[in-house]
Length: 18
Image 1 (cartoon, helix red, strand yellow):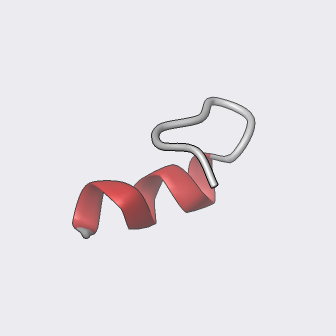
Image 2 (image 1 turned 90 degrees about the vertical axis):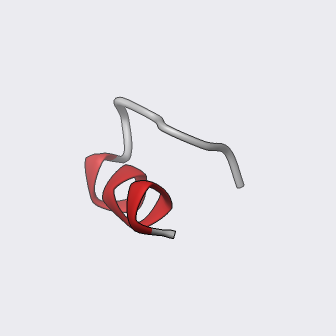
């Protein structure tokens, strides 16, 4: 898994909240 990724905005939000 990678940090902030423009291809995965939904996951990037989870990372920012973590």
